[in-house]
Length: 297
Image (tube, rainbow, N blue to C red; front, side):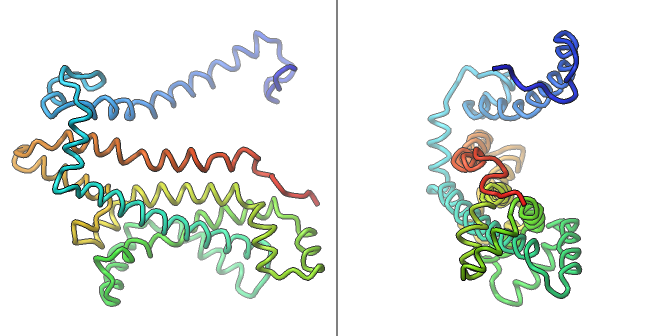
């Protein structure tokens, strides 16, 4: 079997095709290098001591390679508070990302298949909210949560992350193109309730988009820094991002009086492992393709 030829290369001889592919290939190599360079630096730096971080080349190992000792010091720091930060972040991310993806899926499906009064206005308002940065809402949200009395609690971190306007938009666009209205109408004629139609038919078709929104929400919640920083005062409730920032601030205070930079590097490496695992576990839902389960009308 011969490989499929892209449309823009159709009709060209093999030499012309190779020349046309040079620029995209070079561009992709540059992108890969750009994305992999920080990770390479982190992998190498996580094995170094504090002295090695400052006395060796950044992209190569120092003489005192000690990843095991760095891990031990990290987990022993303040009686293992880093483990608590990781568990906090797992909890905040799992709850907020899961609910945000579910809410976005329900809303996107509803706006795609149903007609109701004020639908266009609501749609415009939701899309407009995408343009509002999260940091602009942090202080008003803090004032509101102070009145309610939930500041410095996990709820204060989870609630602002439950709504995903971008996720809603993605689900709606995907539902418009993938869910067959005839299948929905047939299910209604057979007596299926709207909840049954959504759970048994629509949600399975929307699974690739749902997983996409879920992954975006997990990464956003895991890397969220400003909201937990504003909402949380108790150190044991910190997320791993806020906790590492505090360790880094301690290391920089007074000219680095406390040698903790190695904890920051190894902690950063450990912190990126759960999102990578989540991606590996969820990416299989994309293998069936974005049109899996749909019926052309």
